[in-house]
Image (cartoon, rainbow, N blue to C red):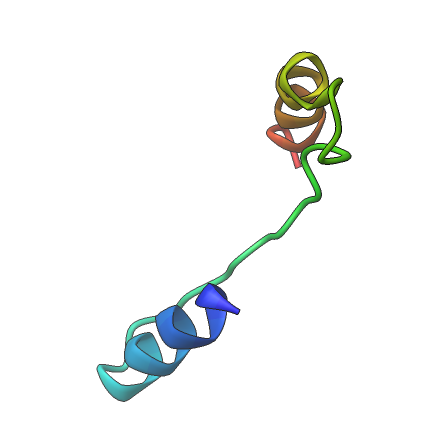
Length: 45
């Protein structure tokens, strides 16, 4: 949802923008431990 605002404003100012969204955790008790793994796996792309 937040991405919409970023893209809208960038387009209004003629600024190229690319956003990549990745689910980073499962929102449970394991979220803190899994977040770092997910961030590392998504970063190179």
